[in-house]
Length: 382
Image 1 (tube, rainbow, N blue to C red):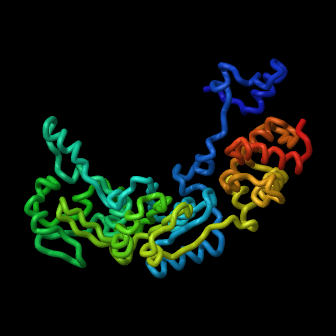
Image 2 (cartoon, helix red, strand yellow):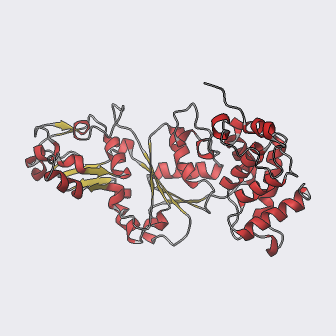
Image 3 (tube, rainbow, N blue to C red):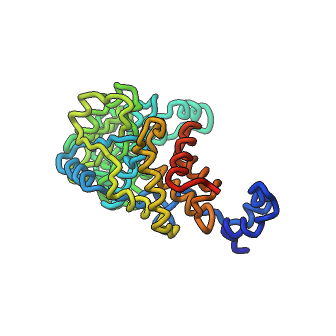
């Protein structure tokens, strides 16, 4: 297989064949050029390919917040403006602890059952009139909280007819329909046999971290409906007659994120450890450098993008203010664009400036603000 060339080399090869900068737009472009990995994949190579491999810089207050949540056994509620790294904090924390993570993105139609379990009645009805109905277990979809509770008990956790231990067991009705529900004999059984797809390679109980993104987007009743589950970590699948409670030694960790788009119920707030993530100037450079470390970004370029970033976040006049302050993620994207745009990284390059402006600004007015800020900081473009 022919080795693909870098974008800059391909562009240099074609330079001069047109006068409008489109010389690299050619049918053989994708076949011959090795494009850098997408920003969302940066830092994932060689480490299993998960979001947990992405570099994350913990500020001391954030570390203290995680410690407090662990010590009191309550969910950690992270707030802050979009892009400050709330979700990544939870994923990175799980990676540092070496535990599995379950991420759930809240929507305007999310209900409590989405985090617990659901049953696909439509598929079950269709199967009963076609290829044949499967055991009820095969129609159950487990949500992130349910998965965390099951993993805390482990695949070897044993259930027996007529016995409830620490609130865990199967009701008499559940045992009576055991064959129909699980296609197993109604005798002592392990959780690994009941849910063979849940535990993976784990041979014992393990703690799981559950990230519930943007919980403030859910209907107001949804957080209230999850209070017992977050506080007591109970799973009751009534259709199966199954009642479980998480093992205290492997109690799931819950991280909730919110963009402060609407007020959360007081009943939820009272049960959480609260922390607001902010952009810390002292670690912002480290965040950018670690996220772009695989590209070998020069320190001078980081200086320039941070200079622009701070200017856009802290405008001197209303006329130089963006409609929405740029986030850390946009700062990283701008630095990435500046580094990859051309070999010489010239700040006078008009195209480079437009790329940076498009990384920061998301409206026409904000694009103009970004371009004016670059003009003031770096002089007129070429």
